[in-house]
Image 1: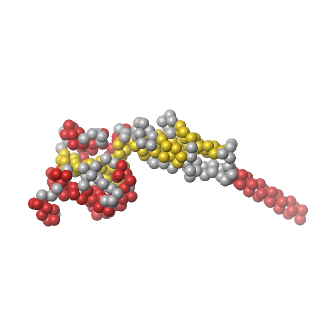
Image 2: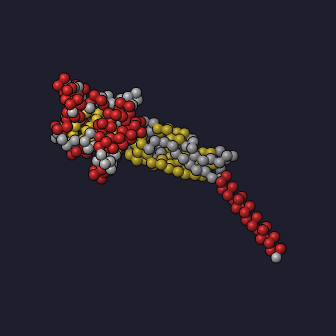
Image 3: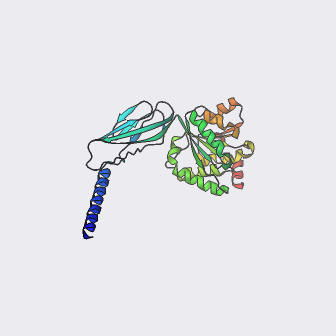
Amino acid sequence: MRAKIIVATTLAIFIICNISFASAETFDNYLKGAIHTESSVEITKSTIMDASQSYIPSGSEEVTYRWDFGDGNKNEGVEVLHSYKTPGKYKVRLEITSGNNKAETETEIFAYKSLINLITDQTDQKANIEMFTKIAEAHGVLISVIESFGSSTEFISEETLTKKLTEGSKDIRKVGKILVWTKENAGLNALSRFVKSSKDIVNLSNKEVIVIDNNIERNMSRIQRQFGAINPQRIIIAQEGAIQTIIQGLKGNTSDLLQASGYQHKVINEKTGKLRPWNFIAYFVN
């Protein structure tokens, strides 16, 4: 009986040691690639692709980092620069090699020719917004959606949008046009608050704000009063039916495009956006 116990104990120790050794050996040889880069980049502009956060066991043999950018170009190195010539989605692949060990990982990047921010709380239009986003991508345009879907009141919508605008301030600096499609005034109010709180880092004077509103004449004076708080290059008010045309023609003059397409719209610029004396009284009355 004692002999059996000794044999069993010895066998158990042997198995545990071998499992521990195998685990240690597997851990020591384990490589894991990690790609750190932007998920979207503007065409012709270089972006950094960084693999320095990859897991490389200590004492590893010389490590090689091979990149495939998905557009026919390749490179080597822990950190590389690359730019895309044409818009579209690209799969970036990274292969790490150390001795006989190898690890692979990949990520997707969208290269765009134009970037637009869409500020919206139109919950019942989510399907259409997804459709517009896909249409835009087909034309090399990236729509960055800042939404407050499901907000029960205009106040909650405004609060949510203001917070998300602040969090996404980096995108705001990149865009040339901002599309506002909200119920009532939540979108413009949020944009005004964001500009006021970020005036040292955000300037909209070279950006166009496009407000989607089916009641142009009724709401024009309200929108006009907010020009001074936002200070964009211009505000264009257009109806919902013009959205697809606006998205497809982002590089051109929006007003000319809408006029050529027969869409009713109004333009508010620095001259028309200034409050005249009689409008100044109306501003405070309202």
